[in-house]
Length: 150
Image (cartoon, rainbow, N blue to C red; front, side):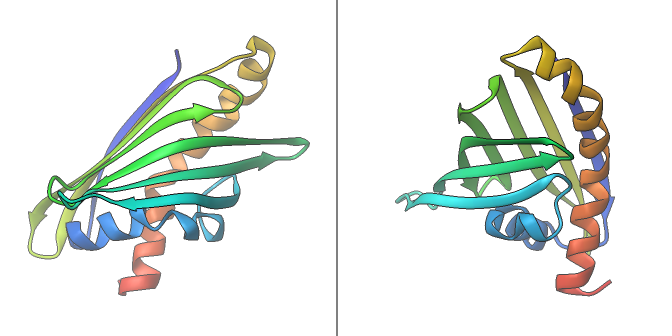
């Protein structure tokens, strides 16, 4: 199964980065390949966690697919977990972590593991997805600079 992981130090607070990544409705404005994102449901849990069910549409040239995920925001742990529910994948797991590295600095961890249902789709989209994932860190950092200042 293809997977990708990265850690990236950014000049922004871990809480700010957690909020920015957790604001999934804004993804179409700056996330590579994300054409649309609709939150179907949101539930605030008693322990401070928030669970979202979201449909994300990714598009590249003639390719366009929508998939549904369960997104769990864990602010006390500074973790965001994404669990695949439905769409063109056989499997998709995504995890974000945010760790304070100093005053106004944090380390953002990104991990994704996925497999398309169709081998043909997987071979067509694999390279393009890999390139997009490599741009994620800089896209979120640029967005943080825009929202919170550089």
